[in-house]
Length: 268
Image (tube, rainbow, N blue to C red; front, top):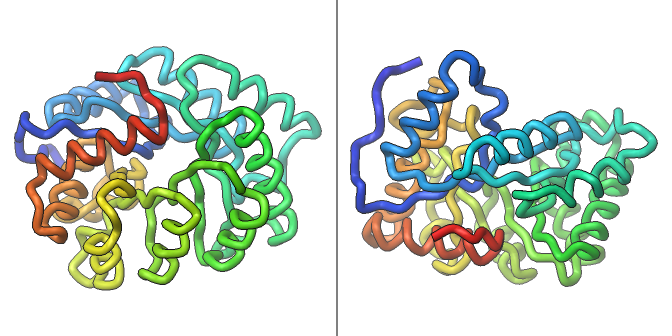
């Protein structure tokens, strides 16, 4: 991995709203990853589960590290091998300290590890749980925009949420905004050829903006091709600011406030 670190700008208060830190070997360089994140101005991270084991790990990381909150849930690529009592296990996880949302959940027609009907059924069940517990949801949507919107419109009434690593066009973005969801942007917005995504960033209301790394995936320029880590959320925030003609300080503060509102993180 590169030894380069992002430029130091202590004035930025950053939050990485979507990480999978458990995929980084903490027994080798996890502490260094957290140190680099703190040095870059990252004051909080949200560790995301995608199945029952990773959700438990997210909770363990949040318990061990104060700057980390947990999101627990079943991602569509993991609905095909759920145990019979998965709902009971999920309820138990959602009742633990440091949980700020249910996710990541949704539809994935790229890998198609489960048929669309099965994905949608588990998606709907988790939306119902989120509504019951008054929790926001983190949505995974890959090559399934129309069906994701259909499920959210039919079964997500009253549920707040975030479109994780948003990668659609303005039409999809506008539809997500109309149902009250925030859009979270990751490394691809730093890619020069992502013109449609740049347009979305320029047009989205400031109060609907979030930033993430999806660590260890989707590494932003100039570290593309390397393992991603939360310190690099700075590049995402700076690119959002550049595209919108705003200061990085203003954008980072707006994203911080948006994250506090949607996830109800008591962190000053």
